[in-house]
Length: 199
Image 1 (cartoon, rainbow, N blue to C red):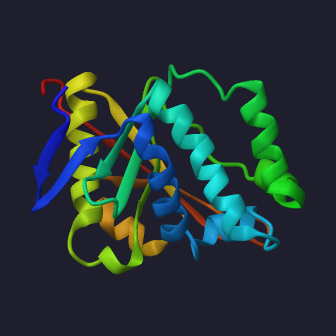
Image 2 (cartoon, rainbow, N blue to C red):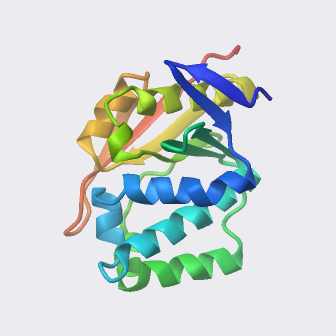
């Protein structure tokens, strides 16, 4: 695997386990005001809970999928194939504890299932001070290219509750497949992109 990819003047590389603490911090800053995490994570110790959740999900993704990071630590993206196993019991317990009294609302959200097989773009975030320079698009392009190399012709699916993200992903070839309302929470946009059958 090519571990470093210049992309739109950004160097994106495959993460190792040593990158995960910094990547989790980057994602926690990137998602500080994100509607979905603000709705599903208690306000009490929000920043710590968010960083711990990102760390748990990244550790799962690096073992069963793919995590890419900006070489300067300003952004990260993680994808998982639909064949990935569920979170281990201990990780699930930690996730439930971190969501606290917001867990019931999270579990009640009736989002459309992803197509099977497919890859899930589970998380992507860029530090606020690095936004507007194309890093988000570069991360999308890099992970799409890598998934396309690993699994030509596959579908990549994602959800976002930020309209700005919809525009970002539409600019990278994704399209909206569904809009889901949540009780007292943000609307969620489901999106997909099917990659060419040959890389």
